[in-house]
Image 1 (cartoon, rainbow, N blue to C red):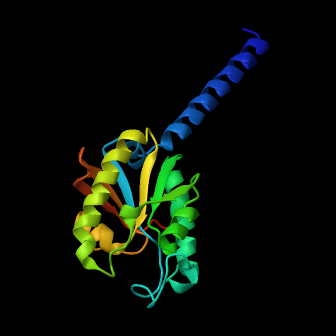
Image 2 (image 1 turned 180 degrees about the vertical axis):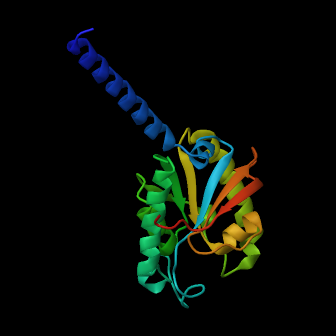
Image 3 (image 1 turned 30 degrees about the vertical axis):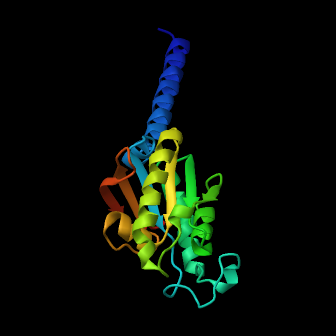
Amino acid sequence: MNNTHIGNGMRWKKIIVSGMCLLASLCSHASDLSEKLQSSDYVLLMRHTRAPGIGDPSNYTLDDCKTQRNLSAEGRQHAAAIGDWLRRQGIKAAEVHSSAWCRCKDTAELLKFDSFKVEASLASFFDDMRKAKDTTQALERFISEKVKTKGAKALILVTHHVNIYEFMGENIASGDLVLAKVNASGKMVSYKLIPRPTDG
């Protein structure tokens, strides 16, 4: 065999190996999280990132962010980092919904998926805990409808501590994520708590 044939053979081997490495790299971007969120059985709930304090100042309004408790600089950095982390898990497309509170809307925006929508059933009931049951039932109905229509997109819901506690029964920290398995009625069957992802 002459050197030309040997050279051509080596080039083809390099091309094949490079192709296999590229395919492996693409496949490695998928994760258990992204695969579950492509199904209609799972939803990702997220508590807004760090906003120092408890509740909101008296006489706050939802139309004026300056009257509310807002994200700190650290909270804004964390929200952007969580969006990057989600994409590294293979979540490229997501339908994002948020509470009307500015700290939730800012968190949702900083995740940097295509867009987000405000959803009434994610609204805080911290000021009136009597609304807990009705709000949670509304959230379950919302989830039930959305998982049927979202396709392969991840369904990400940005809300408050009280809402998530009422839905899943556990306290979570700012920026924590909850991968919730739900039934056809939008009720939680089981969940996995994902502590706020770090930059790494």
